[in-house]
Length: 197
Length: 197
Image (cartoon, rainbow over all chains, first blue to last red; front, top):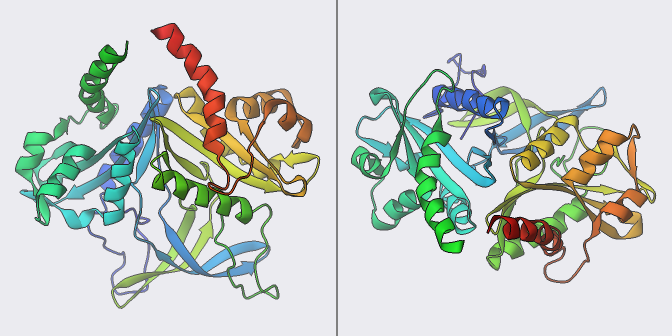
């Protein structure tokens, strides 16, 4: 979930602290997506944060929202197109060195990822283990396989090591996750193409 | 753009009036999308309304947004997957009997549709002429062709009659727009398949 960053509050804290907001990762992804657009490689964009508006006001012909709430997200953060393929993912950071807490992912987001896969899209997670300086892609099917076979409240690092794919940080683009996706689906799509033609 | 409906305001009007909010059309599309999911035909969903949050407050460990503004949308309302293809569209109503006002579509939405097409997706408009009881699909390429060749502030009905495709209303689903899309791309994709295999 992506709350706006650095919002001043009326509380004693100057800035709200959210768990796993992942702004570092988010910033890397946004820069990378801009690179993809500039180089005409792909078009992947961030969806707006879902907000429930409950009270509005009119002022000089413009509408001001006076009361609203962040809603639990029912989809993922990012989606778009790469070589004609539907790409969809959620990006999360964790400070844990040993596992990724599943409280980071909402039930509706899992259902969303299932829908994406069932309808021929490519759905995955990007998880940054900040303490390890490591970014993983975990494909949707492997996420769902884990959830179907475990009652654990977190996915252990070993599962990422076994099923995940590391994204190497680079200068430009910062986080070339599509290069990794390309290798993963290259295999799958290659085989499918062989069959159909 | 989809503002929340029926919000009580502090103004003398009981409810805010927005131009071309298209709730009738939106409701038809939402029902249709639910039908597509239930019948495992497609997965197409509505994106959240983009909102800029400027002030929040904390109360009992939950966050209340105290000030926010509707942002100009930079993408379209709906996107998703159909038979592995990326689907993306904007839905609008007009009361005009003769043309569709282009003030309904923002510059960034046009750029978005261009990106969708350039990257192998299927982008289009669904326009309801409420006074005529007629719903048209106008494919993204025909929308852009019109904009590239005209300085007009609206697209005349004749252009929809010439380039658009009528969606017939039915009972279930209400607005089977994918049936129409299927016919349109069936031709295109059929030809491409012929070439590549």
